[in-house]
Length: 121
Image 1 (cartoon, one colour):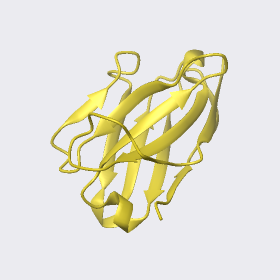
Image 2 (spheres, helix red, strand yellow):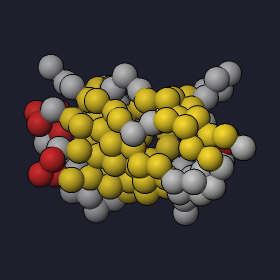
Image 3 (cartoon, helix red, strand yellow):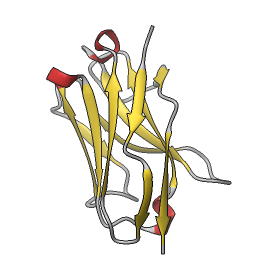
Image 4 (cartoon, helix red, strand yellow):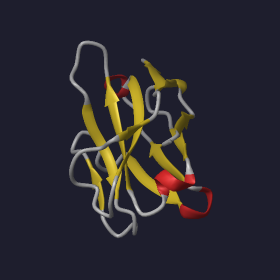
């Protein structure tokens, strides 16, 4: 059974930084692409960042490009989302997800429970 557990959410001031982590069960992590999504109140889910299994290909949404960086540690089967220069509009529930296969493009079938991020102005 897939297991993805996000951590690192909380309250941060505008302009601050916060790193989210997602610990993934080994079976789900190995060989699969990983992504981060977010959902803010009253808004649709947004695809924020993703990384291929090899790590050679990454995606960052325009809304976060230059501020957020996705990375992963294969030895720890963990994926990270480093978020800098946070803005109030970055406040949301952030979800970690895994997609079967190397590429980050396509549907994600395994999801974490989410971690809340609040940005104070």
